Amino acid sequence: MTKVAIGCDHGGIVLKDAVVSTLTDLGAEIVDFGTMTDQSVDYPEFGLKVAEAAAEGKCDLGVVMCGTGIGISISANKVPGVRCALVTNEFMATATKNHNNANVLALGGRVLTPDEAKALVKVWYTAEYEGGRHQKRLDMITAIEKKYMK
Ligand code: RB5
Image 1 (tube, rainbow, N blue to C red):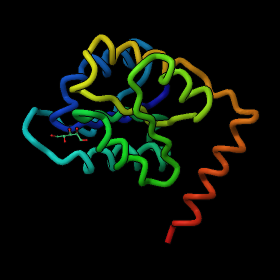
Image 2: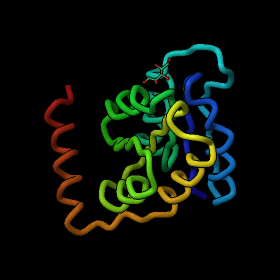
Image 3: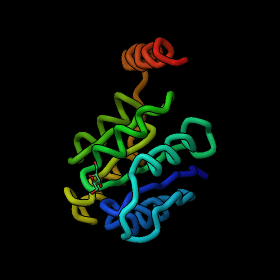
Image 4: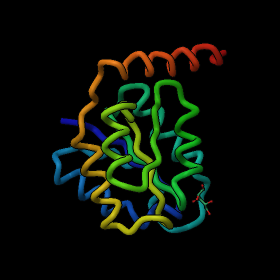
């Protein structure tokens, strides 16, 4: 069963139920790293938890959410091995799996409605990485990570 790590701040929590139910309906197992309420919290904490779970293989994929999706995607992308994509339409959500093999999806709770988020999660989760010419580019991203790793 595919395990999906979920994390959000107070700005993203409005999308969490929709995202979790969509993934559950698609057969995924959810690991919820919080936050659990709409009290103000700091998005890097939740981006890090999801990113580490995906990078270390404890989960296969992740979905992160904050108000815009920007701060939590920036945070997740600091973890080597994570390719976190912030998407706002179905073309981006599909293409980022096809081409970037994005293992973490980022969504904005102040940008998308829950129904829009459901559609984006569904196409990203069900799309497949195409490999081929795209692998060389992912290898180049990994080389950048290695260059700056201490
Ligand atoms: C929190 O107010 C907000 O800054 C956060 O959810 C996110 O939009 C940051 O990028």
